[in-house]
Length: 252
Image (cartoon, rainbow, N blue to C red; front, side, top):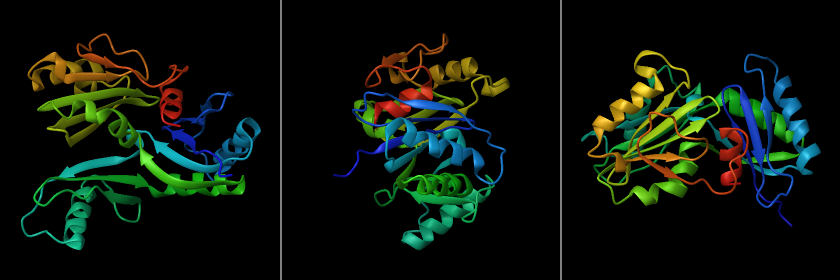
């Protein structure tokens, strides 16, 4: 019998893992992102079977701060797959992202629509994959946290002309802006950012960007900031001790 999928959430310096129906619940901890040689992920991969038994298939869920996002405009003379990909790669280069440093996935839109794309860090994912395989695990997919959040909660916002869906992660705050149900922007802020990156100031600016507070939504991976004035969306299951645990457990 195929083992249920294990969700492994990875943030900038923390991790969490959960499996559906497993009474042992999620586990997690910290890791040294600057360590070389993969020793940290070898340690983590060895802890997984000790907690869950055999690892089996794994879905990696990366925090938004570990990825890069863009929603590229449709360019009239870029209408084939290769030309659209070349255009997206050129735009990513301004963020210091290349095809060598990141694996770039495009969510192919209908003709003429904006082109959403995400870039996943190759080095980190490869290090995690090597460690998991050595401990009996196999990565079946890698997604940014934005992907399952939109899959499970985005449809509730489809009827709104514009909406913000924000949530806490272990390494910051992620904000997803939708227009008529379509992704138009992903923002990843530090929890303790300064200036325009301050969470309170960012939320205040978002209130001016939408017609009313009913367009603002906070997903309950942690309590909403005091400055948040919109609606709360419940996350499936109990909220564990950290946002990462919540995100790993919600869709495991």
